[in-house]
Amino acid sequence: MKKILFVEDESALQKTFGDIISQKGYEMVSALDGEIGLRLAKSEKPDLVLLDLILPKLNGFEVLKRLKEDQETKDIPVIVLTNLEGIGDIEKAIELGATTYLVKANYTLEELMGKIKKALGE
Amino acid sequence: MSFKEISAQLNAIGQCRKYGLSIWQCPQFLFLLMGLIIIVSALAIYAIGLRYVEEPEMVALIVLIISAILMAIAMIITRSFERLAEANRLKSEFVSVVSHQLRSPLSNLKWATELLMSGKITKVSEKQSEYFKILKENNDRMQNLISDLLTVSRIEQGRLPLQKKEISLLDLVKEIIKGLDVFAKASNVEVVFQPKDSLPKVLADPSQARLVIENILDNAIRYTKEKGKVEVTLTKKGKNLYFEVKDKGVGIPQEEQKYIFQKFFRSENVLRHQTEGSGLGLYIAKSIIEKSGGKIGFRSQENVGSTFWFSLPIK
Image (cartoon, rainbow over all chains, first blue to last red; front, side, top):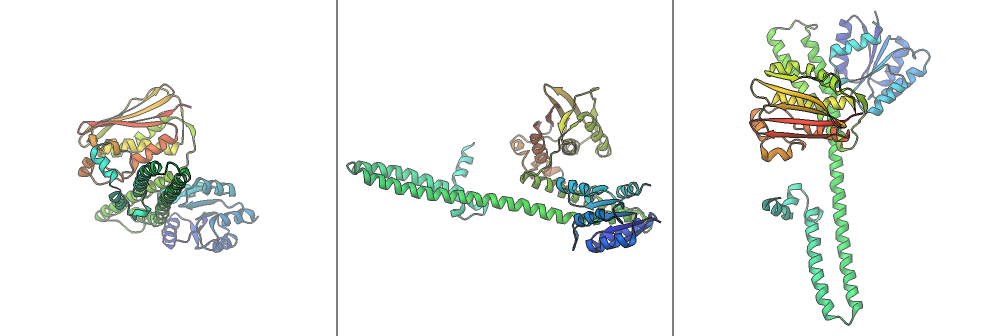
């Protein structure tokens, strides 16, 4: 069973996603802030990280940067899932190594699952 | 400008009250005051000049004092303009912050509703499904409004991103018409588009161009009140591509046509028919087209229909 780490400070979203992800047959690990996210990425070795950008303790850009700098985690694909949609933010995240950049408001749950599947190579 | 409008402009105190400003911060009043001082002082200098014609130093001193007073007033006026500009900037920033803050809960709501609707959590009865649909539709409306407000605040702050590329307007128009098919059918409107075989590409931001075309087409379908036809044409005119949408809808009353591209403006006859809509679409469309180096306009007659058009420069 493939494992997805969801780094997102909104617990309501964690719940919704947890339900749909487990229904699709994946295991979900959740982190409510950037520090926990980084720690879990190392200890849990997920197949994919879904990463919000506005996060307590360590923001998403910093998490992304450190994930990509670390030999252990640099190959894990990262989907940025956020409500920031400035061109600068998108360019920065892609430059730091994000696989895909998705603006929450623009996607339905099914479309998102499609993107997740694609990032997992399914 | 009619006499009524001129007299309204001259009523400085009324104007200041409208903007919620004290008279000493209100440019209209300060301008009026400065004008009066200039007139009075010109007359006074003339009178003094006649009397003290032998003492030019005295006249020069008086002129100097009056000039100093005028300069002080001009500075206060400039300052009050700065305050107004600052208030406007803060308002745009406020709209932007609030819109961003509203986006997260709305996304949560949308996805939770979708999950419930999918029937994967629990079986959904027909009645429940109807209500979920209402939730979803209203959520979509709020999301669209927020997205429009964010675009407007970006336009106002000069931060609207335009990533110009060579795009085929022809393909884009076809795609958008296809996407609006369900809405058009539900509204009993037939969208007619007989595309030319090939047209040159234009230089524009694809997502912004999409926004403009969707807005114009959506309006044409929305304001066609009975079974009807919306005609779309795309042609080459000189160095531009010219896009036009013609409807036989409710039209825009003559006296309201000058306001049509203003933010939040909604025509009286439209408000009578339906309340949905923010009045931001055409304001956004105009800003995008003008920033892309194109032109936008319309012809309309109430109860006959409207024709909206824009042109974009060919690559």
